[in-house]
Length: 566
Image (cartoon, rainbow, N blue to C red):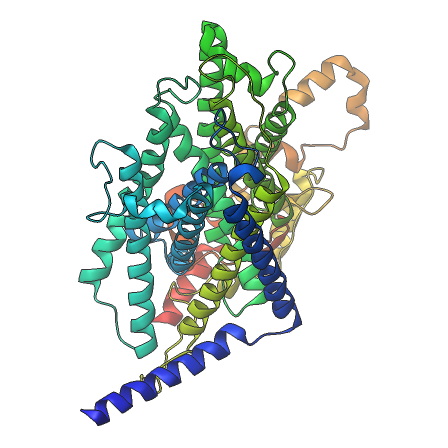
């Protein structure tokens, strides 16, 4: 018995020693980041101690505006936590392997966001020593009649589900065991409706207050979810790029771009629902319009929130346009700009822009404006810094487990899979790409095909970006039935003598297929094969992030790859 206890203590010391090396070993940038966050946490904590000693008078909240900066951040963070479901659904329901590898980071973000949300509720309570009244079986939660009781249950339940999954899979990885799918999969699938539930119940907290017309709308819950599926993934995209740049972990481009595509759809729904609500209030023009007037145009000379909400509108609209267009959505510079804009815009819109107008004007139609005090801001910054600190340590632990740097001495050797999805486009493509310009004549294209034996060429603009593709079938169709484009017809009518200056015959711009079917360098063989078969084409142009052609994958390349794989 004593020998077993000693062995357990030895294993615990080994684990803690390895964990300490993983968590606190790094370069200067890492130590600067951790020290900076720690200082902000201590500053926020010391300010909160002052709030405990002096009371809520150091905040700018009042009897008329009883929820402010703290509850605004709480609401926003619940949405960030719910957004983790956008990784779980494609990973486990649609088996998107590129996303499946990063689900753990989404679950950790959900855990961190819920903890931060609970902390914001804690600092919003003037007497935290009385929170025991909310504990089940100890206090009186007024369950099930109280929506607040439901919110406490779903938030803590969601926290427990994600913590259980993360700790269980992490423990199995540490000991070199295969997780039991009979335990993991049901919990993961349960987290999907639970994630939707936490934001829906939070919306019902506001939605069920008939004396607050700004919140009393059935559309509020869908708006909550739509905005959550914008801000959460936007933060994830930025985090994933930091992880693969600074840490030993690979995140596929197509996983990032899939999240970006989801953001585009979610933001479209969010903007539509917001404008629908604005139309309803302004067109009805009842007394319930007053809170929205205060928010968007000011009321009776009071307009503190007007510049904030219009800033959010601009940020969300510009971010939406960047995500709507594939060219900007799949270019990391504009993608990152869009992520920052959307994250900031949703933080304003679903934070101060949602909470404060619910209290202004109050039930007696008096106006008491609110802006957070410096103490509120410092406490809030401290909580955000604590969340960043916690998430940094959690991510370092997961990456260490995934790469085998943190592993039980008796565990079997870690087998690192180079690519569980097989060869990628960069592995099988033909790299020598001959391209043409839109002004290249059909006759020149025909000569190139005859001399090189290549049956298709990408058409690029002056910046070497792919515009389309000209194949042998395009040339054959042109030779059988040459038809000038509409622009050429109009030009001939308007400027009849300009035709003499044109080169004889048509150009590549007249016959090319546009847009070209393209794929990124890290697209797997399975997706390339499926694309070729479904679209009934012979080749796919492989491009980089700037849409420059870097290779071509044809049907024969696919066949040769299958042959080499046996």
